[in-house]
Image 1 (tube, rainbow, N blue to C red):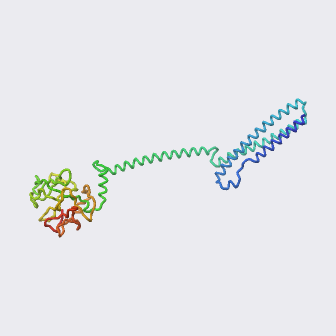
Image 2: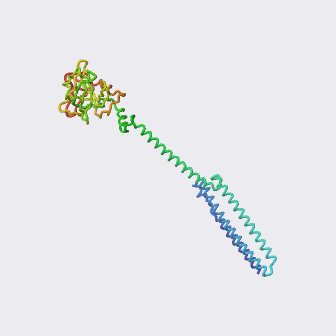
Image 3: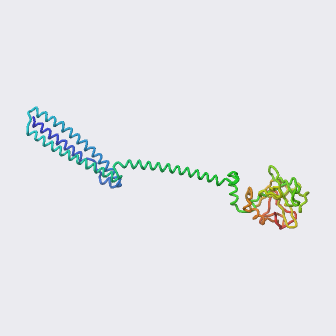
Length: 353
């Protein structure tokens, strides 16, 4: 009976030894062919995962073998005691136990070696054990921080740009953005007669200036809600009777200016010499508010001529009458659309002002 148990134990030991090392030999290892197409970090990660799997398999097998040996030794001891024992059998059993213990120790050493290699690989790849997840978390945290800072910077920049844009478009004196934009665009235009707001007007009232003998104060309808007050130095050249209810051409976008205490809001256009001045005549059929245009110089007039730009002063020298008594700008006739040219009465080739 003791000999039977000894043979059984040896058979079981050989069986488990065979299974253990056959499983160990089949543990997954990275093949050269599959690794050739991967980068060094990827291959290292694969090797780490495989070593971890091998480690788990070895630990499991060792625990199983130790448990089995413990059970078998207990059974053999009990049987030996029941049968009176056998010194030779005990020696054989102890020898086999020593072999298995040595093999277990070898496996434990292999596990320690694999664990150390695993740790070394982790340190080599990431700088410290388990640093991969830590670095990923740090990177995500830094990315979120950068995103928040970038968003805050963008919002701050937008607010600054919006504030600056409002400041740039707001004109002096507190007027609206639209007026400021219009003025800016007008200042960039070429300087020509199209920038003058010339209209047909009708004098509905005229009287001498109370403080100046050479000036008339006129009320002129220009197609607006109310007449404009205009101060003209025509007393010496045109009798007051000829001024009353007369159709005239008026420049309406000069900056209003005081003349002897009265604000003049426009200027009556005349053909002029030092000795004689004639008020320009609109064509028949003209009504207050009709625009005076120029074929070669289309475009809308400025809302108000900027005195600093001296636009009127640059245009005025090119305003003259021609041989046909027509008022012109660089040879281009003053025209009231569908009604005809603006003319002087008798003065040819003289300045218009």
